[in-house]
Structure formats: structure tokens, C-alpha cells
Amino acid sequence: MAQHPAPDTSRTPARSSALDPAVAARLSRDPAGLVAAVVQQHDTGDVLMVGWMDDEALHRTLTTGRVTFWSRSRQEYWRKGDTSGHAQYVKSVALDCDGDALLVRVDQVGAACHTGSRTCFEAGGPLAAVVGERPVAAAGGAA
Image (tube, rainbow, N blue to C red):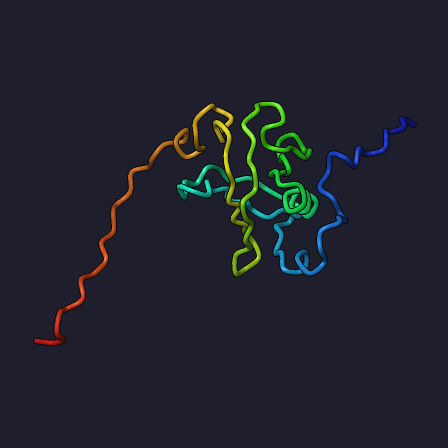
């Protein structure tokens, strides 16, 4: 009978973490234990990218001043900029009302997208969409 090596737990999302239990209790994770993290340039408001965090990635982000994600494709943690030099320095982190998304405001060094574009949304490009118009309120009430 063939023996299988023990699973490499460094390449799976953390089951436990040093994340503050009060913060962890507020998170609403997907079935893989992840929360979406929207990354925004702190001074311009540009949305740079979306990544995924588990409790450990969020803990690292909150305590190191650099953004850490869980890579779903590589199944490992990665700190933005360690190989590219395009680091993200944390300015603030906020949790949305449902606990299922984070807004991470950063000072981005270089390109945020792996394609070399400043943002992943420049690289992806716009989609055709009907532009909505807000109704104009009648001035002075009914005529």
C-alpha cells in the first residue's frame, strides 16, 4: 500500500491565527475561509486590485504595515511586492457591514497588477454598460 506524504499545511489557509478574536468573529468568510479584500490607493481613491485574505493574511496585514494575501492559485501566502518590488504599504483597513469584504487603503509602489498596469482594472478594461441618470427632483413641489 502506497504511503502519501503528510499535507503541507503551510500551503493551506490557516485554521487558527493570531488575529484578534473580536475581529475574527466579525468576518463572514466564503466556504474556503476567505474574505475579499478591495485594495485602494489612499490618496487618489483609485481601486487597484482585489485579493483574498484568510484570518492569518489579515493578521499579517494589520500587524506588519504591508499587505499579505492568500493566493488561491498558488495555495500560499504572498506579500505584495516581495518579488516584484511593487509593494503595498497599509494606510487603513476597514470591514464592510456584512463582514464579507475588506477595504485596504494603501500607498502603492509601482504597478498593482501582475500585468504591469497601475491597476488590475486598467488591465482588464471597461465593459459596455448603459449609463444611468439620477432623476431630477421637481423644484418647488407639484405643479
